[in-house]
Amino acid sequence: MADKKKILVVDDEAVIRRILATRLSMVGYEVAIASDGEEALQIFAREAPDLVVLDVMMPKKDGLSVCQELRRVTGVPIIMLTALGEVSDRIKGLQIGADDYITKPFSPKELEARISAILRRTDRADEVGSGEPSISMAQIGALQVEFNKRQVFMNGQRVRLTGLEFDLLQFLVLRAGESVPRSELLQEVWGYSPRHHADMRVVDVHISRLRSKLEKDPRNPEFIHTDRGIGYFFPRFSGSPEAIGA
Image 1: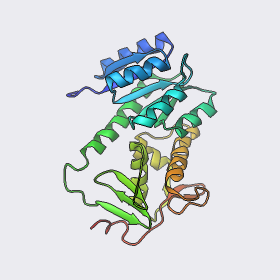
Image 2: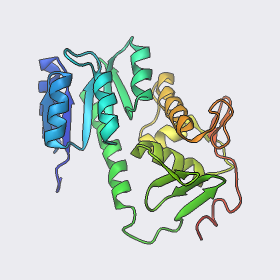
Image 3: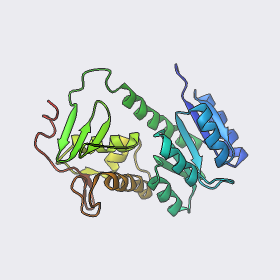
């Protein structure tokens, strides 16, 4: 790995910290570790990691609080670690800004795959602008999506999206008029196929987050529609998709 990516692992269980630090170092990452939420915030500010693996249940400051604080200042990817039965914690973590979650007990190999998929996505995003994009911008009513700058505006005002939220919106806009199954969104945006039905909740919660930022009335959406039993779609608009920004 030419430029080592840095992963911050935050967990109050020493065994998990040791296993993950060893495994992630072996596959080429630089690893920083923290044993509680307060230490995690201090190390994040000092080390500027590329991705955070964050346990929910921790002393001093829990993972949900840490996630909230990080999202106020950064869009760095966050993977939450949650106990198998903590469905509400999983959903809440996604609602406040986590990119993904993985349930305990988990396979370190599965976590490595999730990390790799997210970092590939962020690397692709960093490369935007290195060449001439075939599609530069979409204007749909009050919504403006600038693909090359990875920026979104509503009525001329910048809408702050995380990197993953932008990727999800971009994918739907570029497939405007086409219903996209949730399983395909998970594969194309998150980079892995669903293994359990619960995996689909990752897509549903991110769609909800996007609607809360883009829609006047998220319960009656103008932009991101639900195709019940299938997935989601962005309605076809004038110039979509081949003539966007031409």
